[in-house]
Image (cartoon, rainbow, N blue to C red):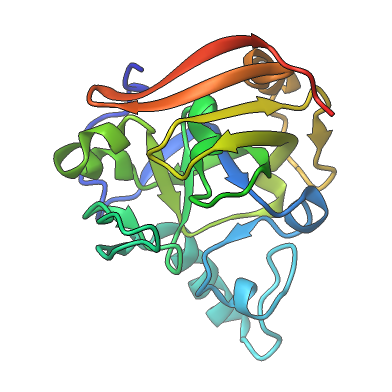
Length: 232
């Protein structure tokens, strides 16, 4: 529950070097994510269905450098509207059309996506840098800020390191959620840097073949180990 230790910055407007593992839950499987990474929904790579960092063929080399650079360094946009379940969204909820949201806490990754999905994948990502959106949330929604969300414009395929299948049950956040990670780790052959696999295994291990419970309490998002679980 402690702050991971990053210096206080204007998270809404300033890009910060992070250089550590982060995590994202997504219903799309490794066959789709490993070769292409994650893009915000308005990014040309996303809209054109290109993979592995490619861009529309009509772009000049100069435009490619400009646009892919912008994908890393422009700040996220935020939204404030009611979700389909009728709850007012936090002021600093990141608009997925402009950014990709991840968390620095692997234990809370399965609370997203905010849907009734019973199966997803939890991806381990090498996060070079991004926007510390959880610092913005501290003033608007202190409970949600304890998920330690960060936002980036995109995550290249080479920075998506691994994935494990996640089985979850419960309501839509902020309802109680229970989940279990599968024992098998899938490694991304497109990854190009030398992050230790030991670090990734260590991060996943407490939640593999074990039931973890997530609760949103007045004091923050808490997790608890509920014991061994059987994976079907």
